[in-house]
Length: 211
Ligand code: B1M
Image (cartoon, rainbow, N blue to C red):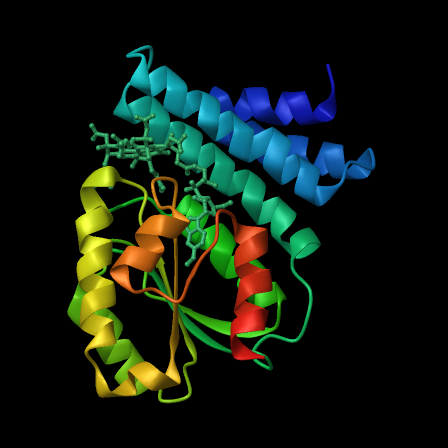
């Protein structure tokens, strides 16, 4: 069994105490950090999601798998991040109101930081007003990143973008959106500036948007 498969199995099984050590073993064996992330952890969460959909597991199991993945990401973080934080620009980031999913958002934040941005992470279930306040309090912000993982929180994403679009500061910021149910078409429809499917392309797009 490969080291990456061992990471994936431990994430699926929610073995939080084991995952960090297994990620370290995979790194020591020369596995690429991005491969450990994508094939060891993100794919494993995909399997967890499928099992949940098929009623093979329930919310508590999803939660422990999420905790296990977070432990792995902690070990991986220094290997994924590099660069001078804060020199490229500043981003306000958060998961929209009603949505508690933060793993993808955290990865986006990590990759954007590693592209040289300062990231102010407002967390999950962030009300529209909090995004607006955060931009007002940080006049040097040039990006706002919004994450939504549920089809039921896509309307909250739409409302957040709409509210940001109505602000006087709108011309100073670019709005990036993402999350599993989001598409380029939806991003265009709601008036966001950019959609990206994953964390690595979010970092690339952030650089392009402020260039
Ligand atoms: Co939830 N959940 N969940 N969940 N959960 C999903 C999303 C689901 C697809 C599972 C399924 O049914 N197959 C389903 C949504 C179905 C739908 O909307 N149609 C679902 C559901 C239904 C629910 C609940 C409603 C369950 C319930 O209570 N009955 C509930 C809702 C709670 C709420 O938010 N109000 C719920 C709860 C939870 C937990 C709390 C238990 C836990 C989250 C823990 C946490 O995040 N701290 C959880 C988990 C773990 C999942 C799955 C299994 C994994 C999500 C994840 O972390 N993926 C998920 C199934 C799945 O995704 N296949 C599922 C890994 C992560 C790296 O990927 O978040 O997609 P992702 O992020 C990617 C991209 O999307 C993108 O880049 C990231 C990295 O590459 N991206 C961006 C994300 N944000 C971006 C922003 C950008 C750019 C790119 O720019 C700013």
